[in-house]
Structures are given as structure tokens and as C-alpha cells.
Image (cartoon, rainbow, N blue to C red; front, side, top):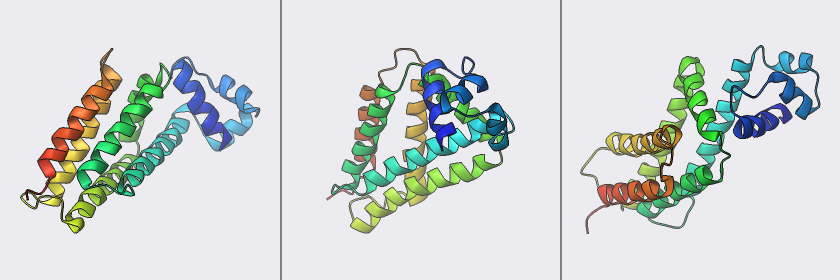
Length: 185
């Protein structure tokens, strides 16, 4: 949807507070009435942007799952793609990420989005269990929470700490996770 694409561009470049509905409408070449037919408020737009961002993240997890690598390699691939995305994001993307997390957690769809993300990470772990390269010392739920928690910590720190070396930390987390879940030979 053009409104979402334009909104993401503006929010990423200018930030949440600086981006107005008027600017979004102007850039998308639509009337404000059209915007408000789709979204009763800017907050409702953020919910849709959050869902779009989640869909992108789920695709990144799915891309990692499709790699012809071990589970450890897939985790490293995923965290490297997260770091690349963070480094390529505009200067206001950190503010946008923080706002999207707030919106997702206050909306009714927040639980459903969290469940989708959990299930995607769990699939990555279960793939490894099926392939026999993930340790059975811990149950899949614990391994999923370890993976998901590491992702959350990385994105939270990147969004809130100026100068956070996201690639360095992403790759360190990936190595730690890989070592933690690998099946010993």
C-alpha cells in the first residue's frame, strides 16, 4: 500500500514527531480524507507500519531458515542480516522502532504479533532439532526464548544507546547462541 511505503520512508528519514499526516498525504499524492478513510489516526497508521515491519522481520527469519547451513549458521546469518538492516536504516529509524514497539504492545494485535515472532523463532529451533544439530539438553521453548530474548536485547540496545556497535554485538550474540544450542558431537 502506497500510504504505508511513503509513511515508512518519511518516518525513517524524519522521525515520528516530525512526520505529519499532511506530508504523508502530499508525498503519497492522496487527499487527507483518503488517509483518514484508511486510518482513523496517525496511531492507527503506526499499527499498520508495525505489522509491515513484523512481516519484514518474519521474512528475514524465513530467509535464514532456507539457508543451506547448520542451525548455528542460520542464526549467524539472521543476526548478520539484522545488523545490516540496522546499519542501512535512516537516522530516525531508532526512534521509529521504539514507537512501533510501544504501539504493538498497547494494541490488541500486540499479543498476536509477539506470538508470530515467537513461532518463527521456534521454527528455526525445531528445524535444528529435526536436523539433529541442536542440543536436546534444553527444551525447545527455552531455546526459543533465548533466541528471541537475544534479538530483543540487540534491537532494544540499538534503539536506545547512541553509538551502539550493532554489528559487533549482533555477531557476538550469534556466536554465543550458536555455541549454546549446538549439539555436542
